[in-house]
Image 1 (cartoon, rainbow, N blue to C red):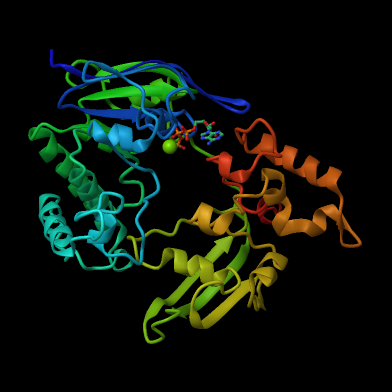
Image 2 (cartoon, protein in one colour; image 1 turned 120 degrees about the horizontal axis):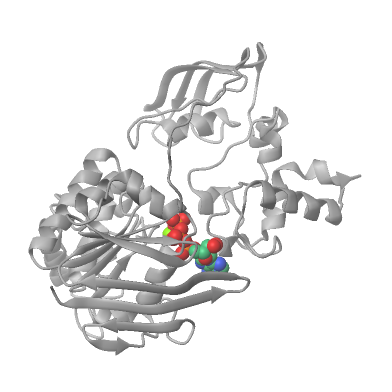
Length: 424
Ligand SMILES: Nc1ncnc2c1ncn2[C@@H]1O[C@H](COP(=O)(O)OP(=O)(O)OP(=O)(O)O)[C@@H](O)[C@H]1O
Ligand SMILES: [Mg+2]
């Protein structure tokens, strides 16, 4: 048996009103790829944040034993000094800085008084080559796609001499091709001796890349499955995640599809800055009552732009085409008008566009539909509270109270109380 590089013993972590982790145990062998899986809110990110010192020693119970030594990390720099490097669920790159600047942010090359840009760029180029990214270190982050940004994150981690690399949902926003090359890169690093922990909801990827899979459910460790020993099929992993046998993953649903509710005809949208460029080109869709329509395409294909431009033209310039609701043409030139026509939009970027993070769940819940809880322009606080409780229950939002700030409730995806508007 290979050497145990990391052992997390009986980790318990509590947030006000939420026990995120309860006596969690994790053992990672040197040189393996260890996957951490579990449903949303199971506690995966929290466990990794404990490991990397984001939640400092003393704010959790239990022990972290790394390389045979009990570690008491007080900050992220402490864990990085040991070669534990985490790439977070949401990328943390600065869009208007170059690849090289981002890679050495907080880890600057040069002396105390000046940054050595030649060294910074040369080193960046070396690490970019290591991860197979063919971009100049001087290119701005905003000018490269998400797939490449993820590689920059990995290059950045390697520049910190990572020995244990933690990747929190690294392929969540990547297309299949970029995901596969990222996983292959991990396998290549594994051959060179790197140990990694990968969190993912994509179970086919987990089965492809992982040597071991630890399942977490409701803040507890359920089991660790080993490739080549245990069954690591998707169905088997899901069984561990949800705690019961899934007989039919795609049960037949009864459909009640009615008449055409909304029609989008010849919808064309131009880029907001580069006016010449068509971002959406002559798209037409019919949506029937009770129907769920999927819009698919690769990153950059214009899916979000289509949705945002339909929703009160909140994206794009020089928009042409028609929208009909119940057979009648409607003009929605603002978000307010779109809401008036009972459209709701759950944004891709929850934190940036969807929620006011510093406000409570309750306030976010009612924001898009204040009329429903107001009389003569005065908000009825009791009704606002009751509406929030109602949706907390309907959507099973995990939070001790709806007065809690939205920022602390990670999977709160009810966006700005749009839901009441969704129900025609
Ligand atoms: N800063 C915080 N304050 C309060 N509660 C939190 C905080 N961070 C996480 N939680 C709660 O702890 C639990 C575990 O969250 P965590 O983000 O670790 O889950 P996860 O397994 O990473 O989920 P996902 O797959 O959705 O990323 C959830 O109930 C979440 O709401
Ligand atoms: Mg997470």
